[in-house]
Image (cartoon, rainbow over all chains, first blue to last red; front, side, top):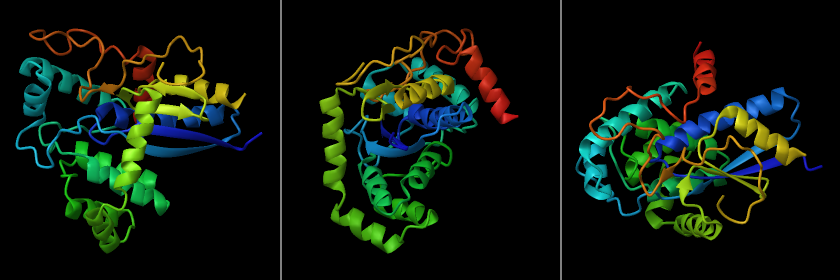
Length: 216
Length: 57
């Protein structure tokens, strides 16, 4: 038996369900292992842009974006964000949609690929999600991303150089193309052991069951 | 289920707990005009809520 259970996760940073799903999946792994699951779970994140048409600098609030770009009624958007905030809190996450800076996530995805090459993808993903949802930081500019990258131990100058040059652009596009080939329309999306697909931020118990099944 | 994947045969799987086309709705969300909190947070089962409360202490 292969000791590693590989999990490929397609997700975005500007994706409230992806942050919730990250927490639920981590808890699912803990329960899988507590129940005797003996395979090492290795996670790799892949790029998915929920709104690739978002400008790097969107001048407005999250409510403005969803009303303007998705044609949703403002009241419905406010309710949706309030419920998502409440739901995230049950996972120990702080969402502040009032201060969130909606931005294009392409460069952030490039940074995640750079971080992967240096063995720091999970830390970088976590830092980007917290910066975006909790701290109201901008995640669309190279300089801002380089600051966040330095916080997880990446070389700031290297990050600026590689993001400016677009070194990881093709890797991001390859992930997006793979998602399209798989028929992925929503994120987070978990591919377990290359065989099973799980769409959405499922409960920890369901993730644990899925991991156990993939381990059989 | 998307793509060329095998079925996990897990009946509780809820694929609506995802962001699609830039919209990240909470299933069961009240329609516009209704108050937040008037309906239960679907997608957040009682077990999820208990799990969350336990983990938050």
